[in-house]
Amino acid sequence: MRREREPMPIKEVLAQTISRLGLKKGLQDNRAVDCWEAVVGEKVAAKSYPLKITAGVLYIKTESPVWSQQLSLMAEELKQKMNEHLGQATVKQIRFRS
Image (cartoon, rainbow, N blue to C red; front, side, top):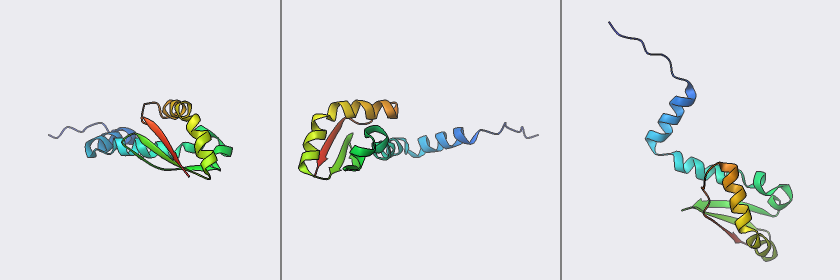
């Protein structure tokens, strides 16, 4: 006789599959890129946008060198806010380019 197993919630199935395929870090990195506007606000996001995250470094494209300089001065604060939003230390550094 076969024993029937309890069905697993889809959330658990997805979490196991993501873990087994090694996609967890990539998904977390993608969340860091996607949540830029939520972290910095609409006005700053209108003048800057995330390009990518590589090895914990989040690269942000800005409208001008002035915006790059201003945001560079706020980089540590923005990094902390970003990691708080994500619930873990995904972002190690933020670099700004115009």
